[in-house]
Amino acid sequence: MDDYITLTYHGREFRLPLVAGSQGETAVDISRLRQETGLITLDPGFANTGSCRSAITFVDGERGILRYRGIPVEQLAERSTFKETAFLLINGALPTQKELTRFSVLLNDHSLVHEDMKIFYQSFPRSSHPMGILSAMVNALRSFYPELQNLEEEINITVTRLLSKVRTMAAMSYKISRGHTVVYPRSDLTYCANFLNMMFDSPVKPYELDPDVVKALNVFLILHADHEQNCSTAAVRVVGSARVNLYAAISAGIAALWGPLHGGANQAVIEMLTEIYRQGDLGAWVARAKDKNHPYRLMGFGHRVYKTYDPRARIMKQMAHVLLEKLKVSDPLLDVARELEAIALKDDYFVEHHLYPNVDFYSGIVLRAIGIPTNMFTVLFAIGRLPGWIAQWKESMDDPAWKLCRPRQVYSGPGERDYVPIEER
Ligand code: ACO
Picture 1 (cartoon, rainbow, N blue to C red):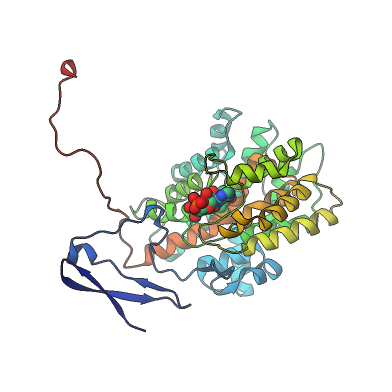
Picture 2 (spheres, helix red, strand yellow):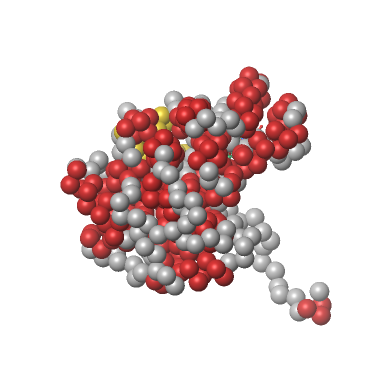
């Protein structure tokens, strides 16, 4: 392979080095472009821009491949737990038994949330969206728990604190929003079982843990655990590049994830399926999504990177089917989703635009079966994505090439003009 490409500009030739990734993808290194040519690049939405080198997650959007640290997500979903996958993403390798036990102990030790934080929760209006609350509360963690990030061991404490407390805080926000007593974490329960217990246990109706539900939650979280440089991860890296504290960087990621074009799509999908179920006429919904004059899009369809079936959606669809059967639950929205998918996948517009179901299309059905309320769906996504955000933040902090993120622009406003006093305007 050539190790550079040539750019000709104003009759001069410039060599731009090529950079090869470990899986054959190639990039043009433009880091000296402006210095040497005076030019910058323009790439709205960064669809052609690699922002970093990363050894965490590999996605091949054309072939529908997703691997964390080299391991296919299908294998992790089948054989791993969320806790183990989180360790893998953050530390680069699957844990030994000793490492896993130590990680569990640390997660357990840090699972309680400062009692004073409850006062914050109670001050939010009842109608607040849990994602707004979670983003604010994670940012507030910095005031309660000083960030330790100088020594490796200190970073591990901050990281474990976040992983453990976000789960407690998410369940706490749900309980408080319902006006119910907060349920504390238990040392005898695993990561996912603990979360379910904190969400659903009550003094009047003890929660019975179902291993199928615990497994489903593990798989859901594993499938969301990382996805290379997506919108929220990019937000974490960009905000983190200012060397702000980790809590603030993660809080920015949560805010980005909230959007309906990103993680907020899981809530939007269920709202869409519910409307379709109520109103019927699937064809009209598909037609509206295809209409150039209408801003409507089919939620849970399409992806910036996947131009084939999202491998996570495939697992999620299968899991929705199996879980509903095991729990003996019948959810009409699963039928609506399957029917909608069948229509869209045969439709020329969706075929030509390479639009397939993404991870959010079937995930809401799984969460509904578990009993998670719709407005908590994106919070569950945030709990899942947390190890990915942390791993990416850590990698960027350790990367000698990682600089303050500060893109340039092509200015298109007016030229210089004089200030006009208000009485003359
Ligand atoms: N329904 C109908 N048309 C769509 C859809 C959709 N869901 N998604 C993309 N298109 C069309 C666009 O209208 C556009 O058509 P055109 O080229 O004829 O103008 C073309 O496909 C390309 O769309 P872009 O917006 O340029 O693609 P982009 O990569 O920016 O969008 C995105 C990706 C934002 C995910 C988009 O597919 C979308 O809005 N999907 C619905 C929201 C959603 O499900 N988001 C979750 C994504 S997964 C995640 O973040 C976890």
